[in-house]
Image 1 (tube, rainbow, N blue to C red):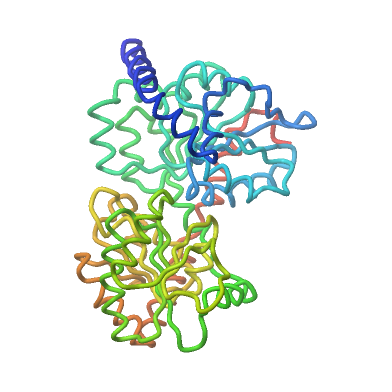
Image 2 (cartoon, rainbow, N blue to C red):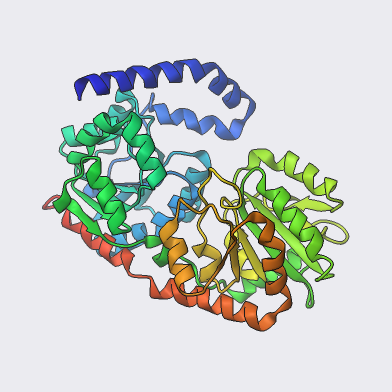
Length: 438
């Protein structure tokens, strides 16, 4: 254990030192990334103590998707425990930005950056926040943080825990001896499935501390968007009656080409078809615009709308927090991350919950249980190969009865799978130290 931890810290520090020149250059060139320096917690003068003597629960959600996932839980926790405040952390600038936007009017939520897993940074962060309990969403296994929390007698609870088979193999190969002692001291694990519980246990989690709570992704899913908001977006992109919309969400490098190839063919079946591409990462915007032009299509960035004249048929979403609204408008949603191997897929629940016919690729290893719920209820189309996208999309766009059935099945499947949020909240409340409930 000691040898493994020392080795881990040496490797972590060495890797950070080697990457430092590149990181400094990135911070100098991109002002929006500069807040990331806060992950070192070099100047923790802006501490986040609980106002008015309240107890603080530290909730960590790594980035945008996890922050959205954690938001309903945070609101429920604050309602359940009026004497508690929340320190909500993210590991990315965009995640922190979404957190601040979501809770901008809530004085009981402080939004911070999660520390790098360096002993000094972790210690400064924990000493500044002074949490009574730490809640970690999904699978953020940072050994120094977990061990430092245990040393301070701060209970840690994992929620919506999941470990894929691929991650299991990778972790067992490199970090098992380090993670095992850290997980042994975790107070509780709320996991999505029995298989996730078995995997956590194989890494050292105690069997009696594992609870199968299900996935809170179903509970946090938005099932409708106000019509007045949808009307604003229709006007924004020129979506008039008779025009159909295809949305490709959370796309990765290589997937836009697949989507555009299908889109070009679909225009022969649907003369008035618009396309919204929402890339997972905005640093590829230039290359995506070039690719769209190469396919002979005009495009515009969402941030440039409204624009003069007719809105180009392809809109590239370069803003945060609007994908749900575009999914709600769509006649067809293509969820990215699964059309190519190695990514593991992204959340297919978001469009399905809105009643939008949902399609995704064959490589969805990162969210098998979300896929299973949809597939078991005939509430999606999972392609056997990315080349099948055109035929699947064509059927949805040209067969209104089929599209309606598929969309309704998606919303119904998501609603029927809800309930994990209450289970997770009960698990957390049970582990809040005595005397801090109010």
